[in-house]
Image (cartoon, rainbow, N blue to C red; front, side):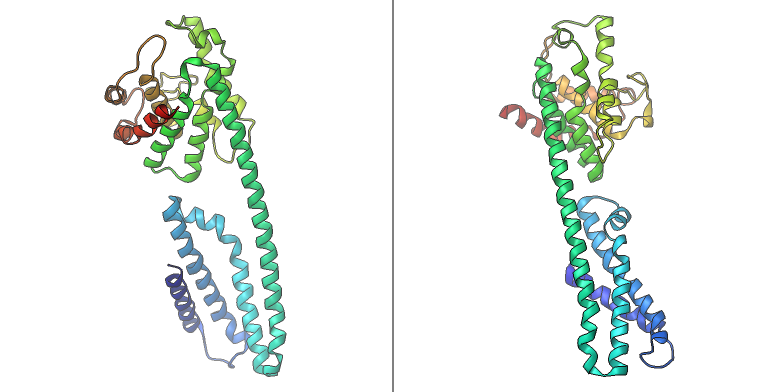
Length: 325
């Protein structure tokens, strides 16, 4: 792949140079300017475009986003390199081959500058990764605190996370959106820390007043998480994970496409796990029965019925986690 990309890039740049070249003094900088800029532009676009395409196909991101984020910043180096090569050729042509060693100085300077820059980029990436790992450890600690708060839903959060990530990948979400769903799944019930424990552990039906206290947990959770500077939207997914497609959910009564897709995924998997888990007021239901109930809710509870076969496809992850805990 790398060799093929290099061949296409060099051939394209050479073709651009020949097409843009015009009559004039041989090796004159003014004569070489237009074809040199054209060749450098084509080389840059082909080289970065092909690499960005390969990355996008493997990471399920948009090609334009990948290219803009990872390669646009490198454009000046291509034109500086082309200009340096032209200047070196001009010096050699007019002053003789003895000046060749002098042409290595700017090339070496460019190389050292590039190495220093890439070293700083790597240090920054390492720092970002360490910060991300710290955030993840904090999130997991919060998730364990939530699990400990509600004794009747032990490991519910972990199952919902596994399941939500599986659905998000199958639905074609990009890496950032999948990470947002993964994080929100861990924290979607963090607002229950504000709900009295006797309500969470009540074995029978809740009173209207008790249910109203339960209904505030998405809002409380979103307010807690909104202060955390995640690089992807997490608070909106937590806030909306109890909304319904028909607008009869809570806390905002959002309807249809107003509900973020990540929140709809969380809503479906949260409901599925509730159906297939033992609760104080009922026994768990078979997987097939739970899927049928989700399908019946299409158009009211959710609009993800067409993705329900994915439930069965990734359900083994949930069951495996249950059996291993």
